[in-house]
Amino acid sequence: MYFAIVLMCGISFGQPSCIEAHDNYGPYKTLEECQARTKVMERDIYMMAPDTKLTQQKCTKADISAT
Image 1: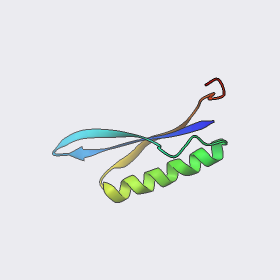
Image 2 (image 1 turned 30 degrees about the vertical axis):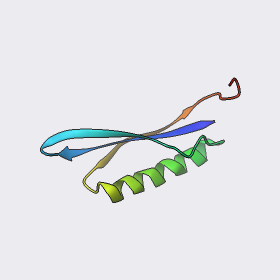
Image 3 (image 1 turned 45 degrees about the horizontal axis):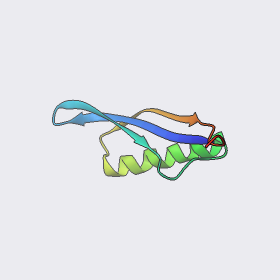
Image 4 (image 1 turned 90 degrees about the horizontal axis):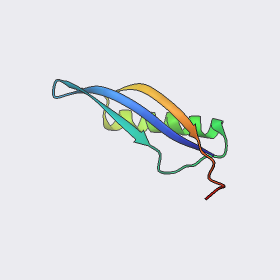
């Protein structure tokens, strides 16, 4: 299972600031599904904060079968 995370940065009140956004809809069965979700998250963050820039996106793999 994969969890989606994006890191976006911008300038706020003259100071650089970054937001790490963790997905609330996952986990995803495949890496491709997770990567598609990071694109949606990126688009949604741009809509809320258009001056931000995508710094990093990743899909972390986690074994949730042990829980």
